[in-house]
Length: 154
View 1 (cartoon, helix red, strand yellow):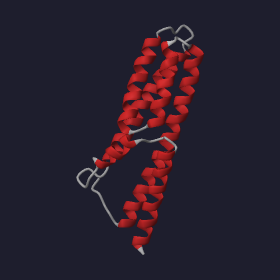
View 2 (cartoon, helix red, strand yellow):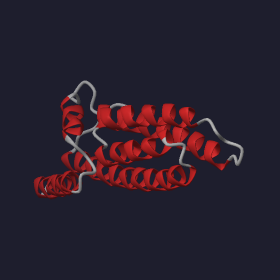
View 3 (cartoon, helix red, strand yellow):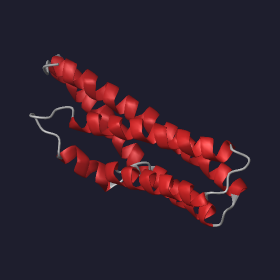
View 4 (cartoon, one colour):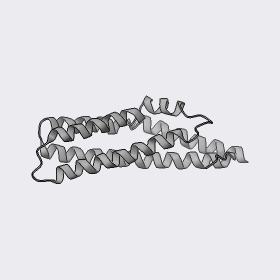
């Protein structure tokens, strides 16, 4: 009976990942990240993704603070934050977040405040969608490991 639960959960994980790839949320870099995980580092992907989320939250907060300042005019600073977000999103395979950051960066290069505000909204939307989907993926993976009887030291 245990095997059936594990198989069902693995199928759910595969369906979710397939959906995320078809939607363009993730790209092949995410698969490469998964390949780096093994028995010696069973939480590698989880750890890397959580570092990404922690750092991205800081960058998004900084971008919002910059754009909320009515006197703001340093669009190069926005570009620097976006370059960081593009790089880290690329490194984990967060394709849609990366793509909307590139569009946001274009608005910042034109010193287009309304375009930047809209860009921030879109980036935050895509970021939160990715975060929710990764949370769901990690919950399924945790359930699969529990169903398989795998225990990792804490």
